[in-house]
Length: 170
Image 1: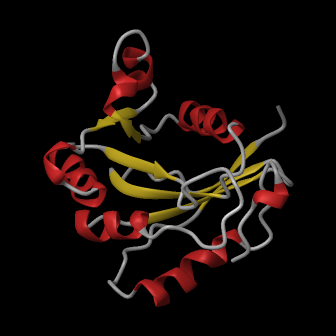
Image 2 (image 1 turned 90 degrees about the horizontal axis):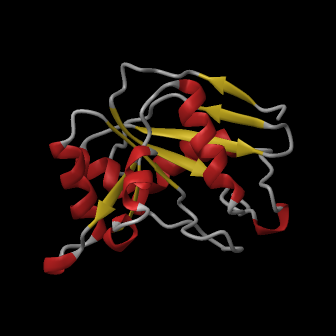
């Protein structure tokens, strides 16, 4: 399909949050699945536990899905950090925009998940303009979101989403 993976595919990093941007289309999901298959690295995502019931549950788990159970009043950051604690390998792909629609700012959950789980963030750009999946260097969050985000957002300069008008301006 003309796509290439650019950057480091580091199998030594067994746990991380993969900050995947821009997320402007449903097509981003299968691009992520293809990237997972081509790289040979286990990559994961979370979805509400109801998605993992019959008949689709087996398929979603086979492509890296992990059911998210938020019962008991836990917030998403705590629940996902607990998944990291119990897994030997967990590379969580998450789209910080939180939607495929136009947003003015990204959600910070990806950052606080990485901070709480004590895992690095790997910036991943889906550049539909150049047909590249660009993998960045692992970045360990310091706890200062504003400063850290200034560093992370450099990875996405000039990147074009599938639906460019839905892409966030960083």
